[in-house]
Length: 410
Image (cartoon, rainbow, N blue to C red; front, side):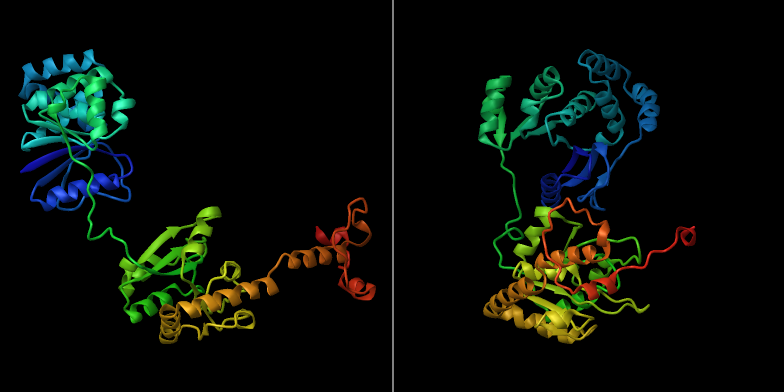
């Protein structure tokens, strides 16, 4: 069976539509896609599906040929489209008719413009028309009059809920016996409860972050229930193809890329992860980290951390710290926390204590006092002094900057 699917691809296929079409193909159907709108997105047509995107000039240029191939039908359907203010939908239907004539069923995935294009194509070609009614088309239909007429002409009307079936009967006087209820489907083998061990890395995609070392360590572990959540993106300096690194390491199916996050979304991934891992290392040009702020954040969230002997990190993070660029040692460290919930709790508790000891807002008070130490008499005396400076006057004087004459700045 050959199904001609009329759909919208405003930002690729909607996930549930992609899943539905994939299942139809798995059942043995030949799939041809006819988009009212088309742009690539997260879900795009599979290579084995026929796909017919359009350009406005092609749609317009095809009309004389469509007219010559079926002049009587073309004019009668065009008159109907003009009457119901749906000329664009008609033009698309006429354009698509070149390929739709080979399908067995025309299927509109929604009862809005997709249905109108399908309806006009049915009138032009005499093909059976099926539509699925979801929700918005019943309450915010762009053309209610044409919606009623197209529904009456459908050979098959499917609703995703019994409630919608009642609404179609009550609002649009559709015979309930003409409506089949087919609920949405999901791959229950893929979508099922599962215990996952989540490793979080938050970092821009740069050479000092060690993404590939983490990916190789996960590959060495070989545990199917490990997921790596990658938060971050390119910082505009040295471009690193982190997705390509995951693919080349053979762990792409275990890595989720979240892009750049902030606010509650970033907090959520910190809270949800089992361990935070940042395998910092020196980059080929000699660049090093200061002290990664994301390690500070993970410690404050009370998370176990696996990181490396890099710059100041081992002076603060008591454990677990491994050698830079050592895949085997990193894998062994991750294996330890993977197998022990008790160890994870202990590390998380201790890391929270270390965060309170080393990284509290007291540090900003100290920074404020340092500003005061060089501001001297220029400090606004009208403001209340929030924090006292503990250094001696002699020390404070030594920290003051020497003014530079204006002419030296020019």
